[in-house]
Image (cartoon, rainbow, N blue to C red; front, side, top):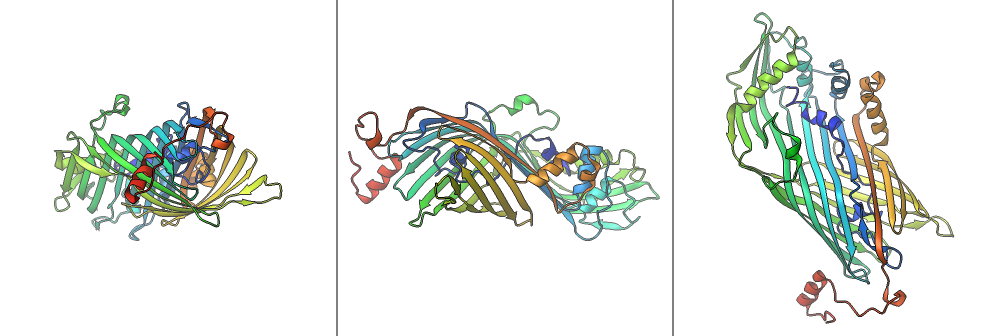
Length: 484
C-alpha cells in the first residue's frame, strides 16, 4: 500500500510549494491583494499605479502530520525503514496529514482611478490540495505481521482515506472603494485541472494465517482518479481544457469609526469537472477476501500489500467523468494599528483571523503581530486549529511604496526540525512531537508607471472621472447621481 496509503505524506516531502498562511494579512503586498480581494496594494500620492511580480514566483508552503505515524513515516521516507515502536493496536489511533499548494507565477494589478475607487488585476497560479487519514495498524502491517495475532480477524483497522487535486488558476480581479469606510473586491477564476485522486476505505478485513504463510485482505469503499498511473508526464502539467472548472472569491473591507479594519472573505468557492476519461471504482471484497501469499516472511511485504490493495481498489474500474469542489474557505479578520513612539516611526498592527473550510471540517484561529520600523517589518504569527495543532512563525519584510520583498515561515520550529529530519538526522527522525510540519513563503513585486496623485496634489489637471462599474450599478439601484 506504499502509494495508496502513504501518498499524502510522500507528496508533502516531494512538493516544492504548497501554501496557506496568515502573515500576509493587511501587509498591502501584491500577494495580499490577490488573496484578499478587497485589499489594496496602492497608496495614493506615494506609489506608482502598476504593480507586477515580473514572473518571479510568489509562493507559500504549509503541511502538517499528526499522530503516532510521524516517526515511522519519517524513518521510511528518509532512512528507508519503518520504526514502529510507538504505534499501538486496537485503540483506534490514526495519523492525519494535510497539505495545500499555491504559487503565483503572474500577478499584475493596475490602479484605475485617482481617488482610489477602481483597481483591476490579472493573475496565474498553480494550486494543490490534499488531506489524508491512516490508522496505526496500517503502518504496523507495512512493517510485517508479527504484531498481529495469528488467525484473529481484524475488522476495520485499515479504514484509511486520502484526497488530492492539483490545478491551474487564471483570474481577473476587480476592486472598488465606495467610500473611506467600505471597499469591495471580487476575483473570478477559470480553473484547469491537472490531477485528481481520492480513496475512501469504509470497511476492511484482515486475517493472518502463519501456518499457511498468507494473509487475507478485504476492502470496501470507492476510488477516483483522473489520470493513468505511470503515464502521467511533464506535458500533462501544461494547461489544457480537458478538466475545466471555475471559482469565485469575494472580499469586503470595512473601516470603523474607531479605526478597526474588518475584512470578510469568501475564498475560492468553485468546482472542477474531471474529464470523461477519468476512472471511478466502487469495490467490495470484504466477504470474499483477497489472499496474499508469503505474507509473513517479510520480504518485499510493502510491495505485496500494495499490489493486493491495488487489485482490490481497481477491481470496479469504470471510465466516467465526475466533479470535485475546491477547498473553499470563509475568513473573518479584525485589524488595528498603534504607534509605539511619539515620532510615529514604530507601528504595531495586530490582525486577528478566523478561518473555516466550507466543505470540510477544518477551522483555524490566528493572530499576526507585525511591528514596522520605516521600510522594515517583522511579524510574529500564532495559529491554532481544530486538530489541536499550534503554529508559531516569523516573517521578515522590506517594503517601500514601490517595491517589496518578504520571506518567512508560519511554522518556524517545525520547519527547522523537518529540515533536520530530511538531512537524515536520527534524533529529528526519531522524535515524536505533537505534530510534524513545515512552512515556507516568499514573494517579490515592484510598481512602475506614473505616481498616483490626488487632484489637489496632481501635476496635471484632472478632467474628472466616472464612478466604478459596481458603484454605478449600486447608484442606479438607489437612484443616485453617477456624476455623468
